[in-house]
Image (tube, rainbow, N blue to C red; front, top):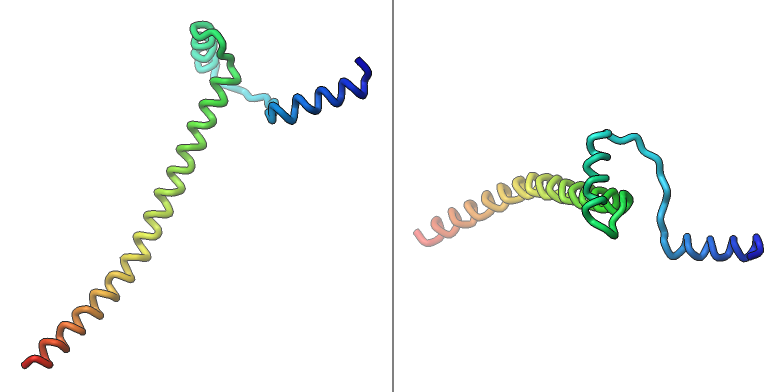
Length: 100
């Protein structure tokens, strides 16, 4: 295969896989656990386990961001609720005063 053709095939495979190779320093105990899991589950590899771990981490980060946003929104709604309570009380007082 020519160098040009090899580059095209390699580029095509990269585009299909859309994966990035990284290096990381990991806890040896965790790596042993991953290796044991891979040995007991044919068809899996370290990358699959790490992909799943990163997906779970990402989901947790999104959940935390949504919880934080909800807490912040609840705080701002609290001020709005108090304003509406004052408006309702004032309207109720006017209505009571008008009916007397």
